[in-house]
Length: 127
Figure (cartoon, rainbow, N blue to C red):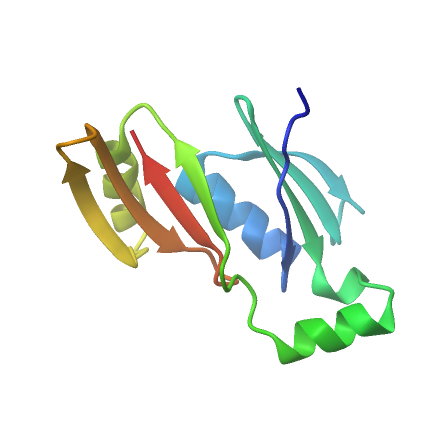
């Protein structure tokens, strides 16, 4: 079975690496180039995420599409965690305001919330 790894185009790779590290404990295992990366590989357990800078896009259509469209629209990345409430508390301490509040679904027995990353990608967290 193939493994899925989302790749997100972001305005500032270094800022996004910090955001995902602080909020969700992702660790950068590759920064290319190391000083001012245009590409990063982030990992946390079995979860991986690739980040690529807008400025590194080579094709003219990509550049035009990125300039004319809002990043993140229609994209929600779900992360299954051990305790959604503790992640919710952590992001609150970081000053990140959820776009969907923490809620418990009694019928299906899960707790979830979501928030936006710096580029508007929605991150759903549930346990």
